[in-house]
Image (cartoon, rainbow, N blue to C red; front, top):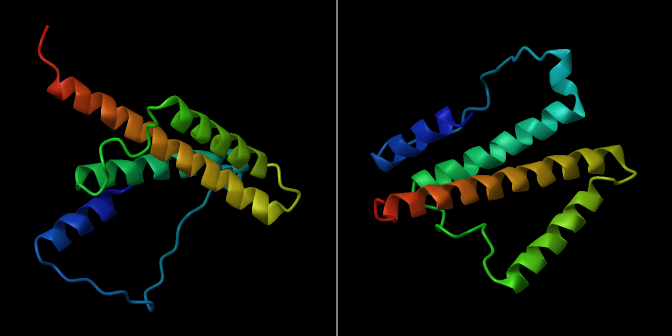
Length: 128
C-alpha cells in the first residue's frame, strides 16, 4: 500500500500534472475473508502507518507529531484513545464500522510516527 501515492508525490515534485478521470472502471477481486471486521481493522492500521510514512518521507510530517512527551499530553492522548475505542462499540453498525476503521488508522499513524522518531534518534546519536 502506498506505492502509487509515493510515485504520484515524487512525480508532482518533479513538475508533473495530474487530473481525475471518472470514466475508467476498476474491478478488484475481493475474497470473503477481506470483508470481515478484523481484516478492515488491519487494513486501516496499515493505511495509517503508510500515511505517516509517506508524510515523513516527503517532509510533510513534523518529527514529533504523534508522540506526546509531557505527562499532560500523554494523559490527554490516553483519554482520546479511550473515547475512540468506546466509539467502536456504537449500536449502529455503520457508525461502529467507521469508528473501528478510524481508531485503527489513528493507531497505525501514531505507531509509525513513534517508529520514525526512533529511527531519527538512532541516526543522530553518536556511535558507541
